[in-house]
Image 1 (cartoon, one colour):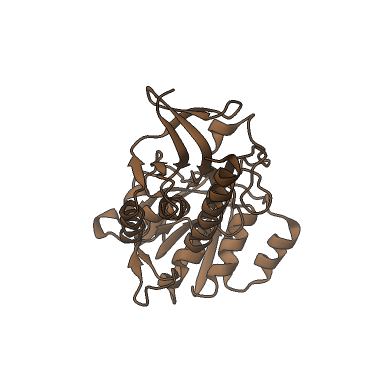
Image 2 (tube, rainbow, N blue to C red):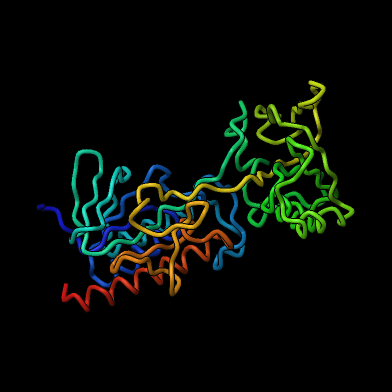
Length: 310
């Protein structure tokens, strides 16, 4: 194998770019494989107001681009594409990118997690304009508005409860009449006067893509078949995320939902392989925490390669 790198970073969101910056400044000449969602979830966000250092906020794509430029300034190399398969049983590790095989003395997995969407006709057009999968990120923008949360599990309950800090009314829409949420989370939501429940109902579309803002949801009752428009200013998805970790099945430990298991924050069970950001963080899922774990993974790679004499 001719192409052997000191460190390969999989993913180009906040975690991947931060890991690239730190390993590049350590003169490790990292290779960043951008992944199937270059820029990660932040590239789908409009205004980011909770990332330190930007008192007026910053657009998500601009923040991601600035991170990349900063890492490139110190020698990080970026490669468009995604890993199709990985072999962690050999050293250097073997990574397959399309028709190319790359060797890695160390590996940082920052492949993130993809929000689960409903697949509605106009859903993707309104992401960042009233359609969101992150209440913590976007709830503030809908202060004094009526909004909807979709889902029936703990994620949906947590989103709905959090959003009552801003919204005048939160309608939790669920396709069944029973909820998957834990009893304690369901009871907490039911006790909140701002939260209203609409069961046996599915969303068929979201309006109004032409205005670039959410004005209403097209709903259907699954029992009666009745269809109607439900006025709201935002739709938040509380149906979870899918970690981008399938390529490591059988090689690294995952939890029941596919998130990579780590110890000491970023260590996987394979020496020299580290995981950071949303691919291993199902609790916080914030840009700043992803960046923090990206830094940790980079520092551990430095120590690992020093130990190996690389």
